[in-house]
Amino acid sequence: MSGVWGWFGGQNAQKKKDSPKNAILALRAQLEMLQKREQHYQRLVDEQEAIARKNVSTNKTAAKTALRRKKQHEHTLEQTIAQISTLEQNIYSIEAANINKETLMAIEQAGKAMATIHSGLDINKVDDTIEKIREQHALGEEIANAITSQPLGPQIDEADLEDELMDLEQEALDNKMLKTGTVPVSDEIHRLPAAANGEIKSKAPVHAEEDDEEEELRRLQAEMAM
Image 1 (tube, rainbow, N blue to C red):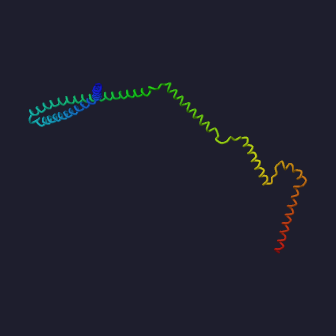
Image 2: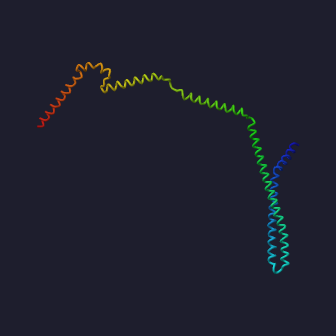
Image 3: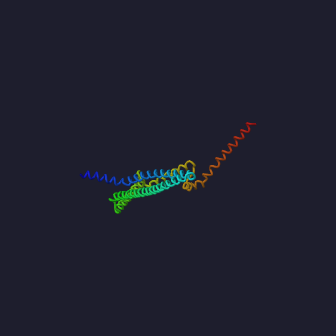
């Protein structure tokens, strides 16, 4: 029994929903008929006016009869035009009311949807959720900083690196002095007495002897050329 009542209830709800649409359709059909009626009576008015103009000089009785008919048709035409205007206003009013109703129903549905969405939420819960998200972001930052700040290789003592660097620099300096014959300042100080005793000056005669040999060789070459 409830199914039957539900079916009838559904039908009634559907009819109620479609009633504005059906009213608009009926009004538009009536409007179309009245517009055709307007065209018909406008044509009759034009015809009677043409007859009156044709007989105004030759047959006044026919002309007067045509004018009388014209007046009757004009009266009917005015009524038809008034009815058309009334129907157009009714159609506009029903359409506007129906649009307002549909808009209001849509707004109500939106309100119900928002109420359903917010039914399980409150401002305290939102604040707690936001705070938890912030804590997770902060934790992620700390984890990222910890990963990037800790080297993945073995721990190296900076002091050991400095000592090894100084040893390499000293070794490079020693090799350079060996190649160029430069004596460190400390060695020159120790060898100053030896230089004062004439060890450095002893190299001068060697250069003098080499110059004499070169000179002798040049003289021999000149003699052979002669």
